[in-house]
Every structure is written in structure tokens, then in C-alpha cells.
Length: 312
View 1 (cartoon, rainbow, N blue to C red):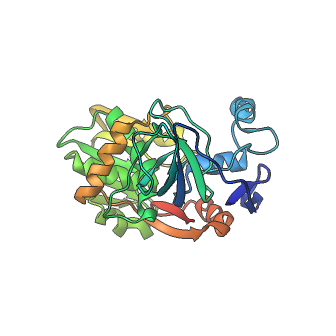
View 2 (cartoon, rainbow, N blue to C red):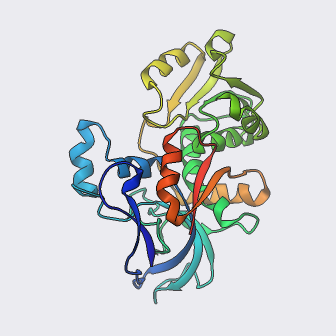
View 3 (cartoon, one colour):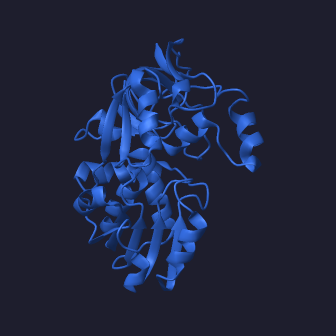
């Protein structure tokens, strides 16, 4: 099968299209013909190998010292081609989407930058909503479940005032929609080119951070979600600014505050919202598998809207 192999840690050009052995499902596994995957912040970090010195050894022990041991990619949308003899939850032909994780949150082997992937049937997999494409389905699990986790951590409530900083990214576009679903009044912070997008997702107020400092407005928020990816902003400085805009019992939460919990409950919740048309996955660009390196270069620019998807 065709797959994108990371030949070493480094810039996007280390990603190369190669022929590799097609996986065979075990007794409790399903083999999925992948139609789409998305590029996550985790993919970028693993490929580049750029982590703090405190995490360097742990990452190399887990992933490999000279290059990642496994094919990259944690998100998938596709069709089940075959199932192991003990599989009960899925059948051949089922259209599915999800993450290469188990509900415990522990990471299984990555490998969705490829034509096929085998996963245990109790991985974070669900049937794809029929009202979205494979490309749109691949844009749901990562940003959607991260946004849901951190909004729940902030105990989001009806009629709260919520500010989403970084409202145009994969997590931000999900957080705006989810906060509105929970009944909050939402303010989105983004750049000039993304104002209309964030407004179209339901934000009540949209502020262009390149032209205005939201903290000088004097408005207070019950919850501020900092959805900017790690390394794209001075987190400590932003947190200090945000604290001045919190209500007396308000809370500031950043997406790298803790390791998130990915659960079947949250995946099922997002699926239901998609089916009802109350959650719209945002896809910025789609690239064919052979142009994955180009897609990584685009993501690293830091200007993507929602998700960047790889078509396979």
C-alpha cells in the first residue's frame, strides 16, 4: 500500500511517499480503507522532533531516536474493508471515523497517513454521519474533542460570557460552535481574514487581534479558552492579559494545560451534533496523499482556517 514515511526528524521534506506492507487485522481488529485524514498539531511536533529538553528523551524513547518508528497520523475517516473473526461492533462496508486511540486515552500506534490502518474494534471509532463527506468527517474528532474537553473542564454553562482566543483554528472553530450550543454568549478572537468565518460559526462578537486589544474593552468573561497551538504565542503573557478580563469567578484555560481525555461519549456527542446540523466541521484545504509535505508546510505557516485534510 502507499503511505507517507517520515525518513527522519526534520522539516516537511522528510515526509516521503513509499510502498509499505499492507496491514492484516487481528482477531479483534478491523482493517479500514482510509479515505481522509487530517494534520494535527501532534503530527507537526512528532515530525519535527522539536520539543523542550525536558521532553526530548521521553519522546525519543517513545517514538524513535533518529526517526519516528511508525507512520504518522492519528485521525481517520474511511470504510471497513475487513474484520477479525472476533469483531462484534462493526461489519465490512461500515463507514467510520475517529482516532487511533482507545477510550482510555492511551495512544495506540499511529499510521493514518496511509491507504489502510488496522485498529482494535474498541478504539475511538464511530460510524460516519451520512450527511458529511469523508474529508469533513476527518475534520471532526481532533479539534472537536479537544474543544469539548476543555469547555467541559471550564464547566461551561448557559448564558455565560465565553471568549475563544484563536477562534479560527481546528480547536477554535469547534469551540465557538460548541460554546454556542451550550447557550453561551461567544466572543471570538482571530485575524482580519478570518473574521467572517468565525462570525458564520455563530460568534456573537468577533475581534481582530491585529487591530484591537480585547482587554481594553473592559468586558469580563466567565470563561476564556486559549485555543492557540503551543509555540504560536507567548502563553504566559497572554494568560496574564486574560486574567484582567475574567469575571470574579471566571476561569482561564489553555489547551496545553493538561493532557486531554478522549472518550467515546464525546465522540458520540459530536456525531449527534453533526447529524442534527448543529456542528459544522471546517476544512480549509485538501491535499492528495503525495502532497503531504506541502500540506505540513502550509500548516506550519500558522494561518490555516479549521482543518487541513489529506485525501487518500
